[in-house]
Image (spheres, rainbow, N blue to C red):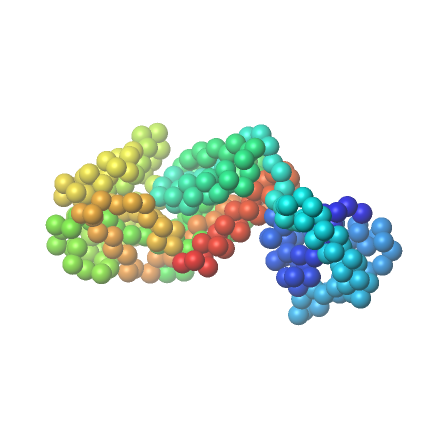
Length: 306
């Protein structure tokens, strides 16, 4: 029996749930369950009672917890460190995401990862949505960040059957316009309202215009679409009155905007969700499991704060 297994048991007692305890410990539920099963085999008695109301410790597990809590409290007092710590990760790790403003979430995530895992160097690579799908399909990467778009109950960007999408955060489509625009007086606009005006999108030269163009085409074809590779350049075009910049944001997570720009939500029935895709049956590396659990915890914290 290892010390971390006692920590696992303490966390299960606190949360009365394997999945909730796994999130706190930055483990998968499966890994946590296997660890407890090995612990039960070694001790020779059952530690957990499972029911529809939750997971509860047996009497013998309760006595084991009481003894271990005193040990961890004394150990923490001697070392001056908390009894439960994040796992240690070292080396390099790559996160892969679709292009666009959803990467604002990743920028905040990188800052927390750098703080909590100082020995781990994390890099983010941006791809076209189709490239992310291909990388996950071929198992080149364990998972990739993705955004789904649902219009009137139909997915605009459906995924292959062998891929699973797990939601993390809700996202919304917004339009950034100049304060001098006549549209600036409205609290929200529809895509049909915007059709007479040019659209500005962020787009790289190597790829096609993102699926936002497909979304626009559902409501009607605009006369002009301006594409730029830089967000500041898009802002400049908005300020110059050249058009309106379409932007996706996670729970209103906008970067610092110029004062002359107004953000208006789109009132059309468009549901967007930011999450990650993975291939069914694909086995993650241990580092990927820890990082992904950490990301899910960060997303939950953002939801609670919003």
